[in-house]
Length: 488
Image (tube, rainbow, N blue to C red):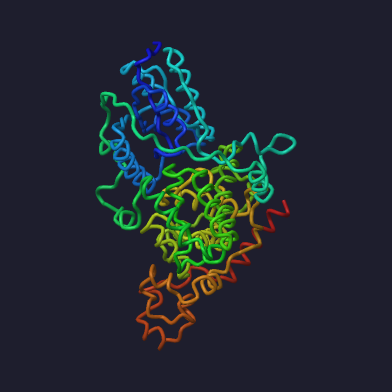
């Protein structure tokens, strides 16, 4: 089926739910042809059912629904509609091309093995019916092929990796959004509600709705506000969960509502405008670099969420303790900074980055529970659950991953709380049963006297749990477990 000069082109939206800096959409708009905008909800393609690919978790599904609504509104402002269809992408896209007599299909690539496999299937299906397929890079600052060691492997240590990325110079300037799209009759599709992305009974997403406004416009506003007034002091404030010291851009990046190179160029412009902030902005960009590092790692290791990168950890003596795992998931460990983080996660779909490290360390080291259990919980509850960052960060904490923290580094949850939440504001927000304790006691309520506990209306073991494990004993047990791995 060869396209005519008037035949429409299809833009297949994937993890790039935006109009600006969207190479595929820009290229389609520049053809002068009518444009059909399509999103395929694909949980059926064989490549996306492989062990190296997973369906979206519950929180991410909620975000996706809101993001698609926002994209639909943005497209309507350009005169276009958003077609929603569910099923294997190769069949869905080829069928739509036949229905509409489209001459070409455009999309942005995703540098992950399952998504690349699906894109290859789409290209083959289109080729079989004479429809052109065009793919563009769009999800990374640098292509994985451009950051390799002398023997052709991906880099496993962050600092040299980030230096290599920076040595390539600035990525291309972000592309502007099309000003208008040539209308095309809506071919019809699914309703978003029919996909069941949002919870109904029970509706547990109230905290997500209160915390977030998904969509490209919100992501752009958040980036602009952060660089205008939030980035000052970022290098130090980012570790304080009791303060608004982070950009909160991660879910917008995860769903492609904003692109990495938009963030890069906006940050570089801000640094040029205000040189005094260059140190904070460099630190901010290095966090973008860590996301890039994790994505490149995933490119080389598709089963990152299942396999220890350090094979020695295959012999690690993990413990099966369902009761302790549930206490950790529910924020009932008896360690206030841990419980605050886990409750923040359940309520808002995110957790402060410093606290993520502390709660992860507690699970894998104090409790000796396999990092994969924690990674799966985060995958389901994080709105920014990223296929690269989530498992890479868990393996970093566990000591089994690339550029990993040494296993003998066991975070002390009491000292971490006292250092980074010194007044206890973070704990009081998310663990309100401890709100009346003074700052000197809020991170270790078990050290309070009976009179102090009574004054704060805290009853240990009832209104708030006793610690499920003693810190010193947990640390010793972790080091002994690590010693067995080293011995083997």
